[in-house]
Image (cartoon, rainbow, N blue to C red):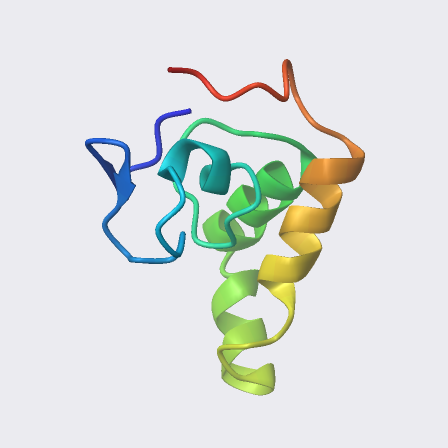
Length: 85
């Protein structure tokens, strides 16, 4: 997995709580890298169409989108669930 927040196997955002970041990327709500599943595709479409900005303006930053993204990625993943090394 190649998230832009991953630096030498460590999350630059500090979101992994000391565990190796590669195992954390699979369920991270701030992940930015190759598409992991359906949730990432929906997030890409909502960002490209401007829907994401509207939702955040109305519902606030914590609108639950990240949790839905993670859940949809878990339900319908792309490829192997093993992180790349």
